Length: 310
Image (cartoon, rainbow, N blue to C red):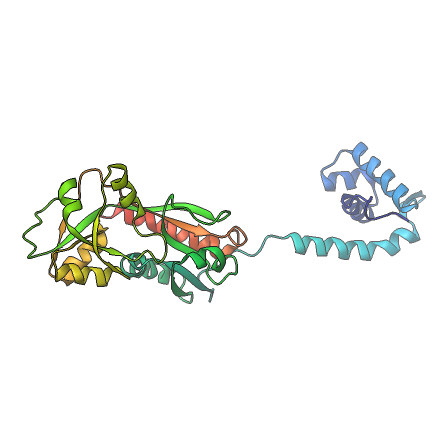
């Protein structure tokens, strides 16, 4: 008896074709093989199964009883392999009720998520979202345990747990925010004036809070004078509106606050780096159709946002 360990499963397709055509040349054409290659495969089948399988008779090539007995099981096995190896069905956003969990920053949630969701509602009206805060625990375990599908917004280039997939996503200019009545700050800041100003920053609970700005200052042997660390941009902006402190934040968010609070935009020191955000996925699930679709939609949205005025 042949051992499956030594049996070439490709021979099962040859067997099925031979049984259907009962003719070596036609079976070769069916499989897009040469006639000699098909003849060699038939020889291997006969040796492996210890049976002639097809015998020439007055009525042409006829299957042996052994071949006829094997045929139904071979067909079922091939059908099962075909179904097993068939790629997953494409993700259909129009009919899907998929629920995505995104871990992100308050900047994305407050500024970019509303227009992003509005765009997706037209494509996927039944898809729903759960927004979570980015934490190191999410990056270390949440993605792997599938409690979070995608992380949106960590600064590109920041250290993330080894093995995760990080894709550059969106770049935005950083500006400063000051109270309308802050007479100590004009329309722009030089480097020395910037570091001399009292500043509001965001608590580093996630490990991804404008580290590029502090690294940029450190390279110039400078350090910000932080007088308050807040949990989110809104709280920080309210502190700025009622104090002499300034803060650094993305331009789109600063413009939003300027319409809501008695604050104004101030140009930062020349050379201050932009905020470069990324998308983070776990390789275990990155190829799954729904997550791949969401990733593609976020990339497309970034191109749309980059093309629009900040």
